[in-house]
Image (tube, rainbow, N blue to C red; front, top):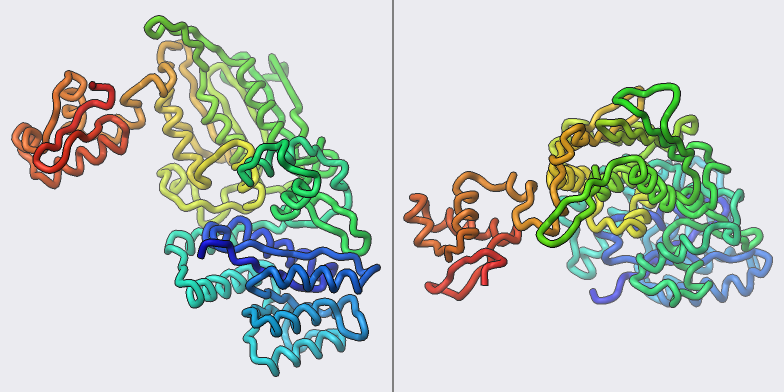
Length: 511
C-alpha cells in the first residue's frame, strides 16, 4: 500500500471530544498504524451547519475508511438529520468500510435521533463494538483497523508491535489528551511549534505556511477546535510542549535544578535555577545548566586540543527527555528535579514506570517501549532527534561506558523515578575522547568475547583475516568464524573484501 489509508473519524464533536482525541493520538503514535493510516477529523462550527455538511462530506470523499463513534447526543441537524448521520449515509454510498463503536450499553439513555442511527446501523449490517472507557475504545479501534489492513491489503503487525501497542494502551494516561480553553493557539510559542512540525514532516521551517503549521499541530493532538466557536486551543500535551510558560497552567511543568558543593544536599546550593518554558526548550536549558556547573578538561589528541565534557551530554538529554515524556502528570504537586553533585548528576521524575516495566527489566535494558504519555514521547523525539523510542536507557548505558564512566544507576526515591550518572570524581583522566575518534568503543568491546578481541588485535596489526586462517588459529568451525566476522562488521570494526574463496576481512581504516 503506497499511500496511507485515510481514516475519517466521525462523531458528535463536543460530547465525544476526548474519544476523538484519543483515537487521533492512537493513529499518530502506534508503530503499526502510523505506518499505514492517517486520521482525518473535520472540525466545524454548528453556527453554519449547511457549510459544515459540505466540508465534512468533501473530506469524507478523500478517505478510504469511515470510523464512527456514537454516544448519547445526536448532534447538529439540517432538515432533521444530523451531520454525523449524513456522514454515515455518504460513507455507505461511497462503499467505504464502516467501523462503528458505541459508547455504553443498550440501556443507556440516548436521544431519539441517535437511536434511529443505531437502528439504521443494525439494518445495514456493519458490525459495531461497544465500549465504556477510552482504553476499551483504543483496543477495539486498533483491533478493527488491524483486521481491515490484514484482509484488504495483506498487512499485519509484528508480535512486538502488538505487544507494544497493548502495553502502551494499558499504560496511557488521559492527561495529555484533555481539551482545555486556557491557552489559545495564538498564544503558544509558534517558533517551537514550527520547529517540531518541520522535523516531523521532513520540511524546512520556512516552508510551512500558517495553515500548514496549524494543520501539523492539530494532526498531532497538540491543538483542538472548539466546535461552538471555531477557536483553536492547546490540549494538555500542547500546553506542556508549546506554552511559553506551561507552569502557569500546570505548576508541575518545571525543572528544579540545584548544584551542591559536595556529595550531599545542603541548604545553600552553589547554583539554582527554576527552569520554566516550553518543555523542549526547558530540556535545552537544563543541559546548559549542567554544562556550566561541571568540568570540561582539555585533552591532546594528535595535533588537536579537544574539550571534553565531564558527563556525556546525550545521556543526560535522554534522561531529561524521558523524565518529561514519561512522568506522572496527574501528580500536580511535584516537579522534575535535577541535582548536580561533586561526584554525580541525578534526574528525578515523579511517578514509577508504567506496568509492565519494572526496575529489573529497565536495568537489563531489554524491554519494549511503553509510555503513559505517547503523544509527548512522540513529539519530544522530533525535537531531540531520538531515532528509536523505547531504547533510551540502553543508549544512556552505552554513552556512559563510551565516556569512560560507569553505567547509570536506576532507582526510586520517595515516589520519584531516579537516574543517577556517576562522574569521574577526582580521577578526571577516566573520561575518554569523544566516541567518534575511537574505532573500538567501550560499548562495542563489551560485546566481544576473548576470541573476537584477539581477532581485532590481529586486524589492528595489519593482518588480513580469512575464515580458514581463523578456523585454524582458534580451532573453531566455519559457522563460528562467519558469526564473528558478521559481528565485527556490524560494530564497524572490520570490512569485507572480495567474494567466495577470495573473501578476506580488514580493519575499516586499513587500506
